Image (cartoon, rainbow, N blue to C red):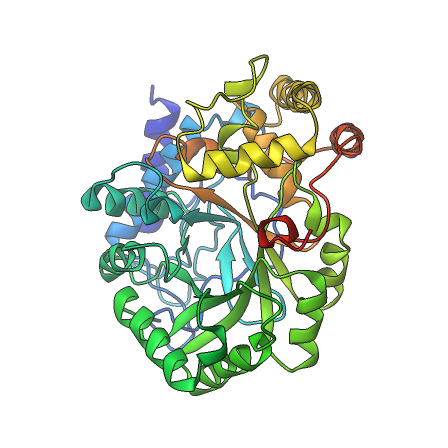
Length: 439
């Protein structure tokens, strides 16, 4: 008798290479609820005139590995079905005239705003490579990227200020050219002096480091609103987009007022990367989420679990001590939690999310769902949110992060979280106002 894991590995390999036409005896195939999806982006190598990506023997083995990850994530026939996760259409060893096998990826993809780029709804984040998060080994970082990519988290986030992050990511991309690197164009100093030459030099440097001809997404950050050249510089980036050096332009931590200014000036913004979680609702309370949903702009959310504050690690535990605030991200999200309310309110939120996770498990919607999955799902279901960004330091949470996409919150569950969030004292203002010193 084959184990469930053996069955699915056999199913995937046999189905990719012929020899298996009836899968009804093996498992129930179920696709997750997804937003608008696409199987390839304009920078992805295509293997035939129909724009389909040919699945190789290696792809089939990767598919089996992804499915094994799903099984370890607790998804089984008894908990509602099994998702078969190849990246694209299978085209190898199919009889002439037969229709290609069409399946869904493990992690859904979504189109950013009204642009042409699609990204995975969970994105790998590599701020950790910038320093302030302990030492790292380059080979380990590349293996982390590959393990997450193989599990279906195909989009990666970096920045020109994240130390060697672009260089390390470029080495990974050389072996996985279909992965989607998103970088940032950050402006902190000499804002009055930035000109077209500097913008071109920096974009070309990012292209060289990431080993790609066209940057899929460049996310623009500007440190000081009092220097009002941010529109000018964004239009310089727009010119490079028109030249074909950039596919799409996004923003990072801009407020709603500035977002409207970019759109009015003709900057083709498709996204804004912002801090958004149950303990930081600034993109919602400012009206940004509603405006973005109506104006072709997506939100990419970071800080959704607050460096582990929104996890079982702190359920029923005291607030993080100074010794526990040992990374840049932990210090930042601890400050966010303090602005949200006292630690008693944070604990009420954790208990509410933990109870919801228990209900999801006991109802058979998805086994092994935990508090952090609920925290991420809450953000993913927020209006205009395309993706959540997870900080990657190792491979320990891959299966956990996949589970976020295997269930949905009920209206009652979301209402229960909303009721606690409504008691918050902050953070006040619009996106990044406090961090900029605006308030």
